[in-house]
Length: 365
Ligand code: ATP
Image (tube, rainbow, N blue to C red):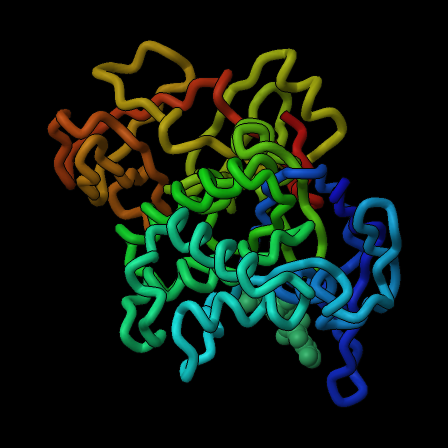
């Protein structure tokens, strides 16, 4: 069993006498064979977390367990964990074959024939058989990344750790490799922790995603749960493209009153609001509708500021008044003709809104 557990893991760095809390009391359970994506903005502690799992960084507090055994003090070479980096980290003077053999020769006492067979089989699986005799500089970025993966796969480790492995590839290749990596991971069924700052990568690849901000774990959930039921305002804003629209509102009787508009709410919404005096109202761009005329109390007169054609849909940026600088975005059918400067009626349906505590950001609805 290769379940991986992070139990109240904390990492402190000393920066000229100042204490930096890079990872703050993070607990995550990753099941055997699971693909967990660790995602968050730059500097949130993703790489540090991965490096602690790999043994490249000491753990200040807490425990990391692999298959139930505490590995805090195990040297990296004894952890049976293989890491794939953004930079590929291939040996430039070795051929692809030698790069892939190297890890096995170092870490196992496998017979030469077996090593050769493992390398050949893995190269075939990755579609790089014809390149075994080449040096890394004779390969494209995508091919080099396959070799880096191959070098990890031949070792048949208990855990793969991947730190932004696709970020040096162009957009099209990155999308292809995403699918390929998922398929590979499913076939190999190896517990994997994959770090990225790209929410699209997290949404499309992970069985589960763990969202970090400022060293703190915000939520561990399936991609769909994080999207539809974000734990707080940070997750709601981080997951989804274009981002969720947010409006700061004051609670006044049965209305939420903001600078630009006032939003009537039902009894059940008020119950969710509870004692909060200030809330953040959130609505996903695809939930904002453009309607022909005002027929609902949640319809608002707006002006189209900018239209961003995306093909299948248009991202339409709307302002409540013509001279307002604050805009919000609606994703509407791309076939529909909408032009900047036009008036538009935006419907923000009550069943689609999210509410967050105005002070803490915690989800209320
Ligand atoms: P990125 O996506 O930019 O790589 P990240 O989420 O991986 O960011 P980390 O590299 O884990 O973030 O860094 C987390 C925090 O710890 C940052 O504030 C960083 O400056 C700090 N940090 C990382 N390594 C050290 C170190 N060796 N000494 C001091 N501070 C460090």
